Length: 131
Length: 496
Image 1 (cartoon, rainbow over the protein chains, first blue to last red):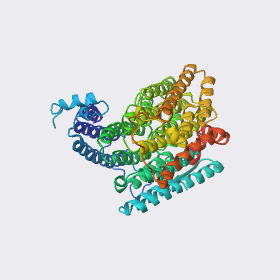
Image 2 (image 1 turned 180 degrees about the vertical axis):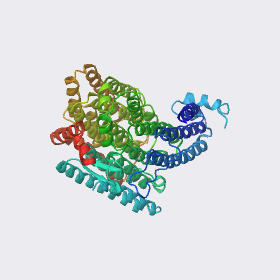
Image 3 (image 1 turned 30 degrees about the vertical axis):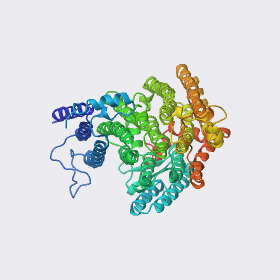
Image 4 (image 1 turned 90 degrees about the vertical axis):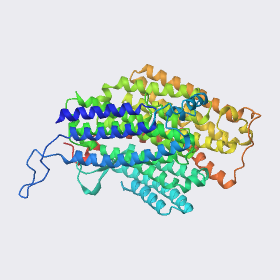
Protein backbone atom coordinates (compact mmCIF):
# COMPACT_ATOMS: atom_id res chain seq x y z
CA UNK A 1 0.00 0.00 0.00
CA UNK A 2 2.82 2.43 0.85
CA UNK A 3 4.28 2.57 -2.69
CA UNK A 4 0.86 3.39 -4.15
CA UNK A 5 0.29 6.17 -1.64
CA UNK A 6 3.83 7.46 -2.17
CA UNK A 7 3.15 7.80 -5.89
CA UNK A 8 -0.20 9.47 -5.21
CA UNK A 9 1.41 11.94 -2.80
CA UNK A 10 4.18 12.69 -5.26
CA UNK A 11 1.60 13.26 -8.00
CA UNK A 12 -0.40 15.59 -5.77
CA UNK A 13 2.69 17.60 -4.88
CA UNK A 14 3.72 17.87 -8.52
CA UNK A 15 0.23 18.89 -9.64
CA UNK A 16 -0.03 21.40 -6.79
CA UNK A 17 3.33 22.96 -7.64
CA UNK A 18 2.45 23.10 -11.32
CA UNK A 19 -0.85 24.83 -10.62
CA UNK A 20 0.84 27.31 -8.30
CA UNK A 21 3.22 28.58 -10.94
CA UNK A 22 0.36 29.36 -13.35
CA UNK A 23 -0.59 32.99 -13.79
CA UNK A 24 -4.23 32.48 -12.87
CA UNK A 25 -4.92 33.02 -9.17
CA UNK A 26 -7.82 30.57 -9.25
CA UNK A 27 -5.41 27.83 -10.29
CA UNK A 28 -3.02 28.99 -7.62
CA UNK A 29 -5.67 28.42 -4.95
CA UNK A 30 -6.40 24.96 -6.38
CA UNK A 31 -2.68 24.27 -6.24
CA UNK A 32 -2.59 25.28 -2.58
CA UNK A 33 -5.48 22.95 -1.83
CA UNK A 34 -3.66 20.08 -3.54
CA UNK A 35 -0.48 20.81 -1.58
CA UNK A 36 -2.46 20.71 1.65
CA UNK A 37 -4.03 17.38 0.72
CA UNK A 38 -0.65 15.97 -0.24
CA UNK A 39 0.76 16.96 3.15
CA UNK A 40 -2.20 15.33 4.91
CA UNK A 41 -1.76 12.07 3.00
CA UNK A 42 1.95 12.21 3.77
CA UNK A 43 1.24 12.38 7.51
CA UNK A 44 -1.21 9.51 7.13
CA UNK A 45 1.33 7.34 5.34
CA UNK A 46 4.37 7.99 7.52
CA UNK A 47 2.22 7.36 10.58
CA UNK A 48 2.32 3.64 9.56
CA UNK A 49 -0.56 2.03 7.69
CA UNK A 50 -2.27 -0.62 9.76
CA UNK A 51 -5.38 -2.32 8.44
CA UNK A 52 -8.38 -3.26 10.52
CA UNK A 53 -6.70 -2.86 13.92
CA UNK A 54 -8.41 -0.01 15.76
CA UNK A 55 -6.53 1.08 18.91
CA UNK A 56 -9.04 -0.45 21.32
CA UNK A 57 -7.89 -1.76 24.68
CA UNK A 58 -9.66 -4.98 25.68
CA UNK A 59 -11.58 -4.80 28.98
CA UNK A 60 -9.21 -7.12 30.83
CA UNK A 61 -5.97 -5.48 29.63
CA UNK A 62 -4.13 -2.21 30.18
CA UNK A 63 -2.47 -2.13 26.75
CA UNK A 64 -3.91 -2.85 23.33
CA UNK A 65 -2.53 -5.97 21.63
CA UNK A 66 0.01 -4.68 19.12
CA UNK A 67 0.10 -3.83 16.26
CA UNK A 68 -2.69 -1.26 16.26
CA UNK A 69 -3.34 1.77 14.10
CA UNK A 70 -1.80 4.93 15.58
CA UNK A 71 -4.62 7.45 16.23
CA UNK A 72 -2.31 10.46 16.52
CA UNK A 73 -1.64 11.01 12.79
CA UNK A 74 -5.38 10.84 12.15
CA UNK A 75 -5.99 13.45 14.84
CA UNK A 76 -3.29 15.63 13.28
CA UNK A 77 -4.82 15.27 9.83
CA UNK A 78 -8.27 16.08 11.15
CA UNK A 79 -6.92 19.30 12.67
CA UNK A 80 -5.02 20.12 9.49
CA UNK A 81 -8.12 19.54 7.35
CA UNK A 82 -10.20 21.88 9.50
CA UNK A 83 -7.51 24.57 9.39
CA UNK A 84 -7.03 24.05 5.66
CA UNK A 85 -10.77 24.41 5.13
CA UNK A 86 -10.80 27.76 6.92
CA UNK A 87 -7.78 29.06 5.08
CA UNK A 88 -9.09 27.96 1.68
CA UNK A 89 -12.47 29.54 2.36
CA UNK A 90 -10.66 32.79 3.11
CA UNK A 91 -8.50 32.46 0.00
CA UNK A 92 -11.59 31.95 -2.18
CA UNK A 93 -13.24 35.07 -0.78
CA UNK A 94 -9.97 36.93 -1.31
CA UNK A 95 -9.71 35.99 -4.98
CA UNK A 96 -13.33 36.98 -5.48
CA UNK A 97 -12.55 40.42 -4.05
CA UNK A 98 -9.42 40.62 -6.16
CA UNK A 99 -11.44 39.77 -9.25
CA UNK A 100 -13.93 42.49 -8.35
CA UNK A 101 -11.28 45.17 -7.85
CA UNK A 102 -8.86 44.20 -10.61
CA UNK A 103 -11.28 42.72 -13.11
CA UNK A 104 -9.01 39.83 -14.01
CA UNK A 105 -7.56 36.72 -12.45
CA UNK A 106 -4.23 37.09 -14.23
CA UNK A 107 -1.42 37.89 -11.82
CA UNK A 108 0.45 39.91 -14.42
CA UNK A 109 -2.47 42.28 -14.83
CA UNK A 110 -2.49 42.84 -11.09
CA UNK A 111 0.99 44.31 -10.98
CA UNK A 112 0.79 47.96 -9.99
CA UNK A 113 4.43 48.40 -9.04
CA UNK A 114 5.53 49.04 -12.56
CA UNK A 115 3.06 51.03 -14.61
CA UNK A 116 4.60 49.99 -17.92
CA UNK A 117 4.12 46.35 -17.07
CA UNK A 118 0.58 46.96 -15.93
CA UNK A 119 -0.52 48.59 -19.16
CA UNK A 120 1.17 45.92 -21.18
CA UNK A 121 -0.64 43.37 -19.02
CA UNK A 122 -4.03 44.93 -19.65
CA UNK A 123 -3.53 44.54 -23.37
CA UNK A 124 -3.12 40.83 -22.89
CA UNK A 125 -6.25 40.48 -20.84
CA UNK A 126 -8.38 37.58 -21.92
CA UNK A 127 -5.45 35.78 -23.44
CA UNK A 128 -4.38 34.65 -19.98
CA UNK A 129 -5.66 31.53 -18.37
CA UNK A 130 -9.34 31.09 -18.98
CA UNK A 131 -11.34 29.79 -16.06
CA UNK B 1 -0.10 31.96 34.80
CA UNK B 2 1.12 30.48 31.54
CA UNK B 3 -2.38 30.49 30.10
CA UNK B 4 -3.01 34.16 30.82
CA UNK B 5 -1.11 35.54 27.78
CA UNK B 6 -3.42 33.36 25.67
CA UNK B 7 -6.65 33.94 27.58
CA UNK B 8 -6.44 37.74 27.67
CA UNK B 9 -6.35 38.33 23.89
CA UNK B 10 -8.80 35.47 23.28
CA UNK B 11 -11.35 36.85 25.75
CA UNK B 12 -10.91 40.34 24.35
CA UNK B 13 -11.35 39.15 20.78
CA UNK B 14 -14.56 37.33 21.72
CA UNK B 15 -15.84 40.32 23.68
CA UNK B 16 -14.97 42.53 20.71
CA UNK B 17 -16.96 40.27 18.39
CA UNK B 18 -19.94 40.40 20.75
CA UNK B 19 -19.69 44.20 20.78
CA UNK B 20 -19.47 44.29 16.98
CA UNK B 21 -21.33 47.57 16.49
CA UNK B 22 -19.89 49.40 19.47
CA UNK B 23 -16.57 50.64 18.19
CA UNK B 24 -15.74 52.74 21.25
CA UNK B 25 -16.04 49.69 23.48
CA UNK B 26 -13.86 47.68 21.09
CA UNK B 27 -11.17 50.36 21.23
CA UNK B 28 -11.26 50.47 25.00
CA UNK B 29 -11.11 46.68 25.21
CA UNK B 30 -8.18 46.58 22.80
CA UNK B 31 -6.09 49.05 24.79
CA UNK B 32 -6.92 47.42 28.14
CA UNK B 33 -6.14 43.95 26.85
CA UNK B 34 -2.78 44.94 25.37
CA UNK B 35 -1.84 46.70 28.61
CA UNK B 36 -2.88 43.61 30.57
CA UNK B 37 -0.78 41.46 28.25
CA UNK B 38 2.24 43.65 28.95
CA UNK B 39 1.71 43.37 32.70
CA UNK B 40 1.21 39.61 32.57
CA UNK B 41 4.33 39.34 30.43
CA UNK B 42 6.37 41.22 33.03
CA UNK B 43 4.98 38.99 35.80
CA UNK B 44 5.84 35.92 33.76
CA UNK B 45 9.37 37.20 33.20
CA UNK B 46 9.80 37.82 36.94
CA UNK B 47 8.53 34.32 37.74
CA UNK B 48 10.83 32.69 35.19
CA UNK B 49 13.78 34.66 36.51
CA UNK B 50 13.11 33.37 40.01
CA UNK B 51 12.04 29.80 39.35
CA UNK B 52 13.74 28.96 36.08
CA UNK B 53 11.83 27.40 33.20
CA UNK B 54 8.16 26.80 33.99
CA UNK B 55 5.68 24.64 32.14
CA UNK B 56 1.97 23.85 32.23
CA UNK B 57 0.07 20.92 30.78
CA UNK B 58 -3.23 21.70 29.10
CA UNK B 59 -6.04 19.67 30.65
CA UNK B 60 -3.53 18.02 32.99
CA UNK B 61 -2.53 15.45 30.40
CA UNK B 62 1.05 14.64 31.32
CA UNK B 63 3.76 15.47 28.76
CA UNK B 64 4.57 14.14 26.17
CA UNK B 65 0.93 13.13 25.56
CA UNK B 66 -0.85 16.42 26.13
CA UNK B 67 -0.20 19.90 24.87
CA UNK B 68 2.50 21.63 26.84
CA UNK B 69 3.04 25.32 27.37
CA UNK B 70 6.57 26.31 28.35
CA UNK B 71 8.07 29.65 29.31
CA UNK B 72 11.80 30.10 29.53
CA UNK B 73 13.60 33.44 29.58
CA UNK B 74 13.51 33.82 25.79
CA UNK B 75 9.76 33.21 25.49
CA UNK B 76 8.89 35.42 28.44
CA UNK B 77 11.09 38.25 27.13
CA UNK B 78 9.28 37.98 23.82
CA UNK B 79 5.86 37.93 25.52
CA UNK B 80 6.81 41.20 27.22
CA UNK B 81 7.87 42.61 23.85
CA UNK B 82 4.58 41.43 22.31
CA UNK B 83 2.64 43.21 25.05
CA UNK B 84 4.62 46.40 24.55
CA UNK B 85 4.24 46.37 20.77
CA UNK B 86 0.55 45.46 21.06
CA UNK B 87 -0.05 48.38 23.39
CA UNK B 88 1.85 50.89 21.25
CA UNK B 89 0.18 49.81 18.03
CA UNK B 90 -3.31 49.69 19.56
CA UNK B 91 -2.94 53.23 20.90
CA UNK B 92 -1.50 54.41 17.59
CA UNK B 93 -4.30 52.85 15.60
CA UNK B 94 -6.89 54.69 17.71
CA UNK B 95 -5.93 57.72 15.62
CA UNK B 96 -4.65 56.01 12.49
CA UNK B 97 -7.34 53.49 11.59
CA UNK B 98 -10.33 54.83 9.72
CA UNK B 99 -13.91 54.15 10.71
CA UNK B 100 -14.46 51.67 7.93
CA UNK B 101 -11.64 49.38 8.96
CA UNK B 102 -12.71 49.62 12.58
CA UNK B 103 -16.27 48.67 11.75
CA UNK B 104 -14.89 45.65 9.89
CA UNK B 105 -13.44 44.35 13.14
CA UNK B 106 -9.92 45.75 13.21
CA UNK B 107 -9.50 45.61 16.98
CA UNK B 108 -10.73 42.04 17.57
CA UNK B 109 -8.52 40.89 14.69
CA UNK B 110 -5.49 42.55 16.22
CA UNK B 111 -6.18 40.62 19.41
CA UNK B 112 -6.44 37.34 17.51
CA UNK B 113 -3.08 38.14 15.94
CA UNK B 114 -1.57 38.75 19.39
CA UNK B 115 -3.13 35.47 20.55
CA UNK B 116 -1.43 33.56 17.75
CA UNK B 117 1.90 35.24 18.43
CA UNK B 118 1.79 34.55 22.19
CA UNK B 119 0.76 30.97 21.48
CA UNK B 120 3.73 30.46 19.15
CA UNK B 121 6.11 31.83 21.77
CA UNK B 122 4.76 29.66 24.58
CA UNK B 123 3.96 26.32 23.03
CA UNK B 124 6.12 23.30 23.70
CA UNK B 125 4.57 21.10 21.05
CA UNK B 126 5.45 21.15 17.38
CA UNK B 127 1.98 20.48 16.01
CA UNK B 128 0.48 23.00 18.38
CA UNK B 129 3.00 25.46 16.96
CA UNK B 130 1.53 24.81 13.51
CA UNK B 131 -1.93 25.56 14.87
CA UNK B 132 -0.80 28.85 16.44
CA UNK B 133 0.90 29.76 13.18
CA UNK B 134 -2.38 29.31 11.38
CA UNK B 135 -4.24 31.40 13.98
CA UNK B 136 -1.66 34.11 13.48
CA UNK B 137 -1.74 33.79 9.69
CA UNK B 138 -5.48 33.92 9.23
CA UNK B 139 -5.69 37.04 11.40
CA UNK B 140 -2.83 38.62 9.47
CA UNK B 141 -4.43 37.73 6.11
CA UNK B 142 -7.59 39.57 7.06
CA UNK B 143 -5.72 42.54 8.55
CA UNK B 144 -3.65 42.81 5.39
CA UNK B 145 -6.65 42.79 3.08
CA UNK B 146 -8.94 44.86 5.33
CA UNK B 147 -10.24 47.83 3.42
CA UNK B 148 -9.88 46.21 0.03
CA UNK B 149 -7.73 48.73 -1.87
CA UNK B 150 -6.44 47.43 -5.17
CA UNK B 151 -2.86 47.69 -3.98
CA UNK B 152 -3.68 45.82 -0.78
CA UNK B 153 -5.27 42.99 -2.74
CA UNK B 154 -2.14 42.54 -4.79
CA UNK B 155 0.01 42.43 -1.64
CA UNK B 156 -2.43 40.08 0.07
CA UNK B 157 -2.35 37.52 -2.75
CA UNK B 158 1.45 37.24 -2.59
CA UNK B 159 1.47 37.11 1.17
CA UNK B 160 -1.27 34.48 1.38
CA UNK B 161 0.26 32.26 -1.30
CA UNK B 162 3.78 32.25 0.13
CA UNK B 163 2.63 31.73 3.69
CA UNK B 164 0.37 28.86 2.71
CA UNK B 165 3.26 27.15 0.94
CA UNK B 166 5.28 27.59 4.12
CA UNK B 167 2.46 26.04 6.13
CA UNK B 168 2.26 23.06 3.78
CA UNK B 169 6.03 22.52 4.09
CA UNK B 170 5.83 22.84 7.86
CA UNK B 171 2.98 20.33 8.01
CA UNK B 172 4.91 17.87 5.86
CA UNK B 173 8.00 18.30 8.05
CA UNK B 174 6.01 17.76 11.23
CA UNK B 175 4.34 14.67 9.78
CA UNK B 176 7.65 13.14 8.74
CA UNK B 177 9.19 13.92 12.11
CA UNK B 178 6.31 12.16 13.84
CA UNK B 179 6.77 9.19 11.56
CA UNK B 180 10.46 8.94 12.48
CA UNK B 181 10.32 9.67 16.20
CA UNK B 182 6.73 8.99 17.28
CA UNK B 183 6.43 12.18 19.30
CA UNK B 184 5.73 15.87 18.76
CA UNK B 185 6.55 17.31 22.15
CA UNK B 186 9.65 19.44 21.58
CA UNK B 187 11.44 18.39 24.77
CA UNK B 188 10.64 14.74 24.10
CA UNK B 189 11.81 15.12 20.49
CA UNK B 190 15.11 16.55 21.74
CA UNK B 191 15.70 13.41 23.82
CA UNK B 192 14.55 10.94 21.17
CA UNK B 193 16.72 12.53 18.49
CA UNK B 194 19.81 12.51 20.70
CA UNK B 195 19.87 8.75 20.63
CA UNK B 196 19.19 8.40 16.90
CA UNK B 197 21.72 8.36 14.08
CA UNK B 198 21.42 11.64 12.21
CA UNK B 199 21.43 10.29 8.71
CA UNK B 200 18.80 9.78 6.03
CA UNK B 201 15.48 11.38 6.83
CA UNK B 202 16.38 13.50 9.84
CA UNK B 203 18.55 16.07 8.01
CA UNK B 204 15.88 16.22 5.30
CA UNK B 205 13.22 16.98 7.90
CA UNK B 206 15.49 19.61 9.43
CA UNK B 207 15.93 21.19 6.00
CA UNK B 208 12.16 21.15 5.36
CA UNK B 209 11.45 22.84 8.68
CA UNK B 210 14.27 25.32 8.09
CA UNK B 211 12.74 26.30 4.74
CA UNK B 212 9.25 26.58 6.23
CA UNK B 213 10.38 28.82 9.08
CA UNK B 214 12.66 30.81 6.76
CA UNK B 215 9.71 31.69 4.57
CA UNK B 216 7.86 32.96 7.62
CA UNK B 217 10.91 34.88 8.83
CA UNK B 218 11.73 36.25 5.34
CA UNK B 219 15.25 34.82 5.16
CA UNK B 220 17.17 34.64 1.86
CA UNK B 221 16.16 33.12 -0.60
CA UNK B 222 12.58 33.32 0.60
CA UNK B 223 12.33 37.00 1.49
CA UNK B 224 10.79 38.43 -1.67
CA UNK B 225 7.18 38.24 -0.50
CA UNK B 226 7.84 40.65 2.34
CA UNK B 227 8.76 43.81 0.39
CA UNK B 228 6.05 42.90 -2.12
CA UNK B 229 3.28 42.98 0.46
CA UNK B 230 4.38 45.00 3.49
CA UNK B 231 4.01 48.41 1.88
CA UNK B 232 0.30 48.07 1.17
CA UNK B 233 -1.72 47.89 4.43
CA UNK B 234 -2.25 50.73 6.96
CA UNK B 235 0.90 51.68 8.81
CA UNK B 236 -0.24 50.33 12.20
CA UNK B 237 -0.74 46.91 10.64
CA UNK B 238 2.68 46.88 8.98
CA UNK B 239 4.26 47.95 12.25
CA UNK B 240 2.86 45.00 14.14
CA UNK B 241 3.72 42.66 11.24
CA UNK B 242 7.31 43.82 11.01
CA UNK B 243 7.75 43.95 14.77
CA UNK B 244 6.30 40.55 15.59
CA UNK B 245 5.42 38.26 12.68
CA UNK B 246 8.86 37.88 11.13
CA UNK B 247 10.35 37.69 14.63
CA UNK B 248 8.09 34.72 15.39
CA UNK B 249 9.78 32.96 12.47
CA UNK B 250 13.22 33.75 13.90
CA UNK B 251 12.16 32.71 17.40
CA UNK B 252 10.95 29.36 16.13
CA UNK B 253 14.16 28.87 14.13
CA UNK B 254 16.20 29.52 17.26
CA UNK B 255 14.01 27.30 19.41
CA UNK B 256 13.77 24.33 17.06
CA UNK B 257 17.34 24.41 15.85
CA UNK B 258 18.90 24.72 19.30
CA UNK B 259 16.58 22.31 21.09
CA UNK B 260 15.66 19.65 18.54
CA UNK B 261 18.32 19.83 15.82
CA UNK B 262 21.56 21.11 17.41
CA UNK B 263 23.62 18.67 15.32
CA UNK B 264 22.07 19.86 12.06
CA UNK B 265 22.66 23.47 13.08
CA UNK B 266 26.36 22.81 13.52
CA UNK B 267 26.57 20.80 10.32
CA UNK B 268 24.66 23.44 8.38
CA UNK B 269 26.58 26.37 9.85
CA UNK B 270 28.09 27.58 6.55
CA UNK B 271 24.67 27.46 4.90
CA UNK B 272 22.93 29.31 7.72
CA UNK B 273 25.63 31.97 7.78
CA UNK B 274 25.48 32.35 4.00
CA UNK B 275 21.70 32.77 4.19
CA UNK B 276 22.14 35.32 6.98
CA UNK B 277 24.76 37.31 5.06
CA UNK B 278 22.79 37.32 1.82
CA UNK B 279 19.59 38.32 3.65
CA UNK B 280 21.40 41.28 5.18
CA UNK B 281 23.10 42.32 1.98
CA UNK B 282 20.22 41.94 -0.48
CA UNK B 283 17.79 43.56 1.95
CA UNK B 284 20.08 46.55 2.33
CA UNK B 285 20.71 46.83 -1.42
CA UNK B 286 16.96 46.67 -2.05
CA UNK B 287 16.41 49.43 0.50
CA UNK B 288 19.04 51.65 -1.11
CA UNK B 289 17.23 51.41 -4.44
CA UNK B 290 13.78 52.33 -3.12
CA UNK B 291 12.46 55.87 -3.61
CA UNK B 292 9.38 55.13 -1.53
CA UNK B 293 9.71 55.21 2.24
CA UNK B 294 7.45 52.30 3.18
CA UNK B 295 9.04 49.98 0.64
CA UNK B 296 12.47 51.05 1.82
CA UNK B 297 11.58 50.19 5.41
CA UNK B 298 10.16 46.84 4.29
CA UNK B 299 13.52 45.96 2.72
CA UNK B 300 15.19 47.22 5.88
CA UNK B 301 13.12 44.70 7.86
CA UNK B 302 14.53 41.93 5.66
CA UNK B 303 18.06 43.21 6.07
CA UNK B 304 17.84 43.18 9.88
CA UNK B 305 16.48 39.62 9.88
CA UNK B 306 19.93 38.61 8.65
CA UNK B 307 21.54 39.78 11.89
CA UNK B 308 19.09 37.73 13.92
CA UNK B 309 19.90 34.64 11.90
CA UNK B 310 23.63 35.31 12.19
CA UNK B 311 23.40 34.67 15.95
CA UNK B 312 21.89 31.23 15.32
CA UNK B 313 24.49 30.46 12.68
CA UNK B 314 27.41 31.28 14.98
CA UNK B 315 25.77 29.17 17.70
CA UNK B 316 27.64 30.49 20.73
CA UNK B 317 26.19 31.97 23.91
CA UNK B 318 27.50 35.44 23.07
CA UNK B 319 26.11 35.33 19.53
CA UNK B 320 22.69 34.11 20.62
CA UNK B 321 22.47 36.71 23.38
CA UNK B 322 23.40 39.31 20.76
CA UNK B 323 20.59 38.00 18.55
CA UNK B 324 18.03 38.15 21.35
CA UNK B 325 19.12 41.65 22.37
CA UNK B 326 19.07 42.73 18.74
CA UNK B 327 15.59 41.25 18.30
CA UNK B 328 14.21 43.32 21.21
CA UNK B 329 16.03 46.43 19.98
CA UNK B 330 14.88 46.07 16.40
CA UNK B 331 11.25 45.60 17.42
CA UNK B 332 11.27 48.97 19.18
CA UNK B 333 13.49 50.92 16.79
CA UNK B 334 11.96 49.67 13.55
CA UNK B 335 8.43 50.18 14.88
CA UNK B 336 9.30 53.75 15.84
CA UNK B 337 10.51 54.30 12.25
CA UNK B 338 7.32 52.86 10.78
CA UNK B 339 5.11 54.86 13.13
CA UNK B 340 6.84 58.18 12.31
CA UNK B 341 6.52 57.33 8.63
CA UNK B 342 2.80 56.92 9.27
CA UNK B 343 2.62 60.34 10.92
CA UNK B 344 4.49 61.90 7.98
CA UNK B 345 2.16 60.21 5.51
CA UNK B 346 -0.82 61.53 7.46
CA UNK B 347 0.57 65.08 7.49
CA UNK B 348 1.66 65.26 3.88
CA UNK B 349 -0.38 62.56 2.18
CA UNK B 350 2.75 61.04 0.69
CA UNK B 351 5.58 58.71 1.57
CA UNK B 352 7.65 59.15 -1.56
CA UNK B 353 11.08 60.62 -0.83
CA UNK B 354 10.98 62.95 -3.84
CA UNK B 355 7.67 64.54 -2.86
CA UNK B 356 8.64 65.18 0.76
CA UNK B 357 10.85 67.81 2.30
CA UNK B 358 11.26 70.62 4.78
CA UNK B 359 9.47 68.94 7.65
CA UNK B 360 12.29 69.69 10.07
CA UNK B 361 11.33 73.37 10.21
CA UNK B 362 7.74 72.64 11.17
CA UNK B 363 8.10 69.44 13.18
CA UNK B 364 11.53 69.17 14.85
CA UNK B 365 10.23 66.53 17.30
CA UNK B 366 9.10 64.32 14.44
CA UNK B 367 12.51 64.69 12.82
CA UNK B 368 14.17 63.56 16.05
CA UNK B 369 11.73 60.67 16.34
CA UNK B 370 12.90 59.43 12.95
CA UNK B 371 16.60 60.18 13.40
CA UNK B 372 17.10 58.47 16.77
CA UNK B 373 15.66 55.08 15.76
CA UNK B 374 17.31 55.38 12.33
CA UNK B 375 20.75 55.79 13.87
CA UNK B 376 19.90 53.05 16.33
CA UNK B 377 19.01 50.63 13.53
CA UNK B 378 22.25 51.52 11.77
CA UNK B 379 24.12 50.75 15.00
CA UNK B 380 25.60 54.10 16.02
CA UNK B 381 26.77 54.16 19.65
CA UNK B 382 25.36 54.84 22.21
CA UNK B 383 22.01 53.66 20.82
CA UNK B 384 20.59 50.19 21.34
CA UNK B 385 21.49 48.76 17.93
CA UNK B 386 25.18 49.26 18.63
CA UNK B 387 25.27 46.82 21.55
CA UNK B 388 23.44 44.09 19.71
CA UNK B 389 25.74 44.38 16.72
CA UNK B 390 28.79 44.61 18.97
CA UNK B 391 27.92 41.29 20.61
CA UNK B 392 27.24 39.62 17.26
CA UNK B 393 30.45 40.89 15.70
CA UNK B 394 32.52 39.97 18.74
CA UNK B 395 31.05 36.48 18.61
CA UNK B 396 31.80 36.32 14.89
CA UNK B 397 35.44 37.29 15.46
CA UNK B 398 35.77 34.70 18.24
CA UNK B 399 34.45 31.99 15.93
CA UNK B 400 36.79 33.15 13.15
CA UNK B 401 33.94 33.95 10.71
CA UNK B 402 35.69 36.99 9.28
CA UNK B 403 33.70 37.14 6.04
CA UNK B 404 30.43 37.16 7.97
CA UNK B 405 31.72 39.95 10.21
CA UNK B 406 32.80 41.97 7.18
CA UNK B 407 29.37 41.60 5.59
CA UNK B 408 27.64 42.58 8.83
CA UNK B 409 29.79 45.70 9.13
CA UNK B 410 29.40 46.63 5.47
CA UNK B 411 25.62 46.29 5.68
CA UNK B 412 25.65 48.59 8.72
CA UNK B 413 27.31 51.26 6.59
CA UNK B 414 24.68 50.75 3.87
CA UNK B 415 21.93 50.96 6.49
CA UNK B 416 23.37 54.19 7.79
CA UNK B 417 23.51 55.51 4.24
CA UNK B 418 19.94 54.80 3.22
CA UNK B 419 18.34 55.79 6.51
CA UNK B 420 20.18 59.12 6.82
CA UNK B 421 19.52 59.72 3.14
CA UNK B 422 15.83 59.22 3.79
CA UNK B 423 16.01 61.54 6.78
CA UNK B 424 17.67 64.26 4.71
CA UNK B 425 15.03 63.88 2.01
CA UNK B 426 12.05 63.99 4.34
CA UNK B 427 13.12 66.57 6.88
CA UNK B 428 16.14 68.52 5.81
CA UNK B 429 15.98 69.38 2.15
CA UNK B 430 13.66 72.29 1.28
CA UNK B 431 10.12 71.24 0.48
CA UNK B 432 9.63 70.69 -3.26
CA UNK B 433 7.33 73.15 -4.94
CA UNK B 434 4.89 70.42 -5.85
CA UNK B 435 4.45 69.43 -2.20
CA UNK B 436 0.86 69.37 -1.02
CA UNK B 437 -0.26 71.56 1.86
CA UNK B 438 0.23 69.93 5.25
CA UNK B 439 -2.85 68.41 6.81
CA UNK B 440 -3.98 69.62 10.19
CA UNK B 441 -4.02 67.06 12.99
CA UNK B 442 -6.27 67.77 15.99
CA UNK B 443 -4.31 67.64 19.29
CA UNK B 444 -5.86 64.44 20.72
CA UNK B 445 -5.07 62.60 17.50
CA UNK B 446 -1.55 63.98 17.51
CA UNK B 447 -1.04 62.66 21.03
CA UNK B 448 -2.38 59.23 20.15
CA UNK B 449 0.00 59.08 17.20
CA UNK B 450 3.06 60.51 18.90
CA UNK B 451 2.88 58.95 22.37
CA UNK B 452 3.61 55.36 21.25
CA UNK B 453 6.25 56.54 18.80
CA UNK B 454 7.96 58.56 21.51
CA UNK B 455 7.79 55.63 23.92
CA UNK B 456 9.48 53.29 21.44
CA UNK B 457 12.16 55.81 20.47
CA UNK B 458 12.90 56.47 24.14
CA UNK B 459 13.01 52.72 24.76
CA UNK B 460 15.67 52.45 22.10
CA UNK B 461 17.62 55.35 23.60
CA UNK B 462 17.43 54.08 27.19
CA UNK B 463 18.33 50.58 26.05
CA UNK B 464 21.40 52.08 24.42
CA UNK B 465 22.48 54.09 27.45
CA UNK B 466 21.79 51.29 29.95
CA UNK B 467 22.24 48.03 28.05
CA UNK B 468 23.69 46.11 30.99
CA UNK B 469 20.54 44.78 32.77
CA UNK B 470 18.79 43.66 29.61
CA UNK B 471 21.95 42.29 28.08
CA UNK B 472 22.62 40.18 31.15
CA UNK B 473 19.07 38.85 30.90
CA UNK B 474 19.59 38.04 27.22
CA UNK B 475 22.82 36.29 28.08
CA UNK B 476 21.11 34.04 30.64
CA UNK B 477 18.38 33.41 28.08
CA UNK B 478 21.02 32.34 25.55
CA UNK B 479 22.71 30.06 28.06
CA UNK B 480 19.36 28.51 28.88
CA UNK B 481 18.81 27.82 25.19
CA UNK B 482 22.22 26.29 24.66
CA UNK B 483 21.82 24.03 27.65
CA UNK B 484 18.36 22.57 27.10
CA UNK B 485 18.37 20.23 30.11
CA UNK B 486 16.46 22.74 32.26
CA UNK B 487 13.85 23.08 29.51
CA UNK B 488 13.51 19.32 29.15
CA UNK B 489 13.30 18.78 32.91
CA UNK B 490 10.66 21.47 33.24
CA UNK B 491 8.51 19.80 30.58
CA UNK B 492 8.97 16.11 31.27
CA UNK B 493 9.60 16.29 35.00
CA UNK B 494 12.78 14.23 34.87
CA UNK B 495 15.82 14.04 32.66
CA UNK B 496 16.06 10.47 31.43
